[in-house]
Length: 367
Ligand SMILES: *[C@@H]1O[C@H](CO)[C@@H](O)[C@H](O)[C@H]1NC(C)=O
Ligand SMILES: *[C@@H]1O[C@H](CO)[C@@H](O)[C@H](O)[C@H]1NC(C)=O
Ligand SMILES: *[C@@H]1O[C@H](CO)[C@@H](O)[C@H](O)[C@H]1NC(C)=O
Ligand SMILES: *[C@@H]1O[C@H](CO)[C@@H](O)[C@H](O)[C@H]1NC(C)=O
Ligand SMILES: *[C@@H]1O[C@H](CO)[C@@H](O)[C@H](O)[C@H]1NC(C)=O
Ligand SMILES: *[C@@H]1O[C@H](CO)[C@@H](O)[C@H](O)[C@H]1NC(C)=O
Ligand SMILES: *[C@@H]1O[C@H](CO)[C@@H](O)[C@H](O)[C@H]1NC(C)=O
Ligand SMILES: *[C@@H]1O[C@H](CO)[C@@H](O)[C@H](O)[C@H]1NC(C)=O
Image 1: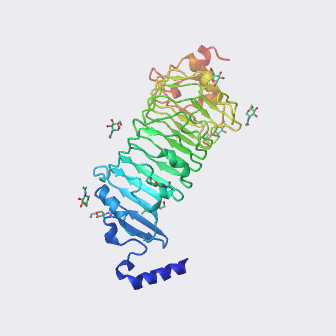
Image 2: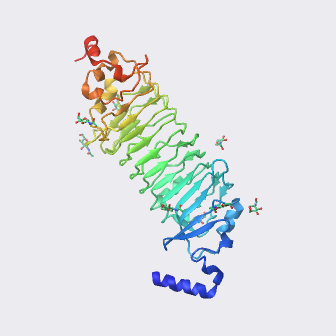
Image 3: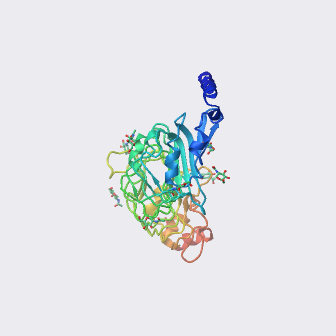
């Protein structure tokens, strides 16, 4: 390989002196203002951050590329000066295929079909963030056999089709304020580890939404408008779950059986206990919870913590919890009480660390 490479370089030198300095990149003038670099004797990277408009981008990819594979394809502007591209045609990239795509701070808003389809067997990371993107071809993800990391946060996506991907590990669709999707959108992403859907305007979490993400470690639903966790909303088959963020919503109700760890069952209405289940840290700050009923929480308080550095698994800071005999079941049980973040708040302004277990024992009926 190295030898034939040198041989090719020699031929090229003999044939075209101008191209010699650019090999194996395309001729500089042909791809201007994009910059192609050749690193580690192996990879071509292409940076088109200085592109002026869609027409110019089309022209760049019509250049003669000695090699069709690009490791990193980059178009990154700045928050104050986004790059002026708006639309990708289905064939904008011609024969060129990518390993990683980084498009950030542009005015990109639409694409036809799947412009990346030549990259189906090479694409690993797609970070198209901080643009105005309204559509993404979620329906073709199944064909991308190496894709592990898809970040589409801070766009204007309106619809996410059901995702099928055996390889995807990280998905971030945060800050797409009008994003909508079906109840089964996450049923077929068995390797997904982190799922971030912050500030997406979510109002409802359907039963079993996250259940089949059996490797899930982090779920982030911060900044939405969820007011109730229905029976089944938080049923998980993952024994690896470590962090659940549902901060800054309007949660006022958590139904009995809303949060459970289930073993693999063919019946979606059944949740038999998952062997080896551990409790993630539930970050539920800045919601409207007024009570922590034992029939909702006690089974989860009895699970060991999934995060070994702490036993504090439940963070209710910024909730107006009524700190009366309703929570005596927690306060008077050392094992439970230490599981609650001490700065969790009561409706009267007290924090949990100010609560005196002896007082609860003397004044509430606890057994
Ligand atoms: C973009 O253009 C500016 C100004 O000419 C230059 O300093 C910068 O290096 C260029 N960046 C890239 C990635 O081509
Ligand atoms: C696109 O940008 C190029 C280079 O700056 C410019 O010559 C051309 O007129 C622009 N085309 C459009 C349609 O704006
Ligand atoms: C290209 O990608 C590699 C691997 O993802 C990364 O480490 C590197 O920093 C990237 N290079 C550029 C110029 O973006
Ligand atoms: C990729 O998309 C182009 C344009 O839509 C289409 O002609 C081509 O068949 C597609 N290729 C694959 C591998 O799907
Ligand atoms: C996002 O999309 C919505 C509905 O499609 C539209 O009303 C809104 O103006 C868009 N926002 C931006 C910043 O483009
Ligand atoms: C929750 O729903 C399941 C069926 O999916 C049902 O068996 C169970 O009784 C329900 N729990 C409560 C408290 O209603
Ligand atoms: C799930 O748990 C139930 C009750 O403990 C048990 O009967 C069943 O075999 C388990 N199923 C699986 C797939 O582990
Ligand atoms: C967590 O609780 C266990 C059992 O009570 C205890 O052995 C361990 O030291 C605690 N860990 C921390 C970090 O507090």
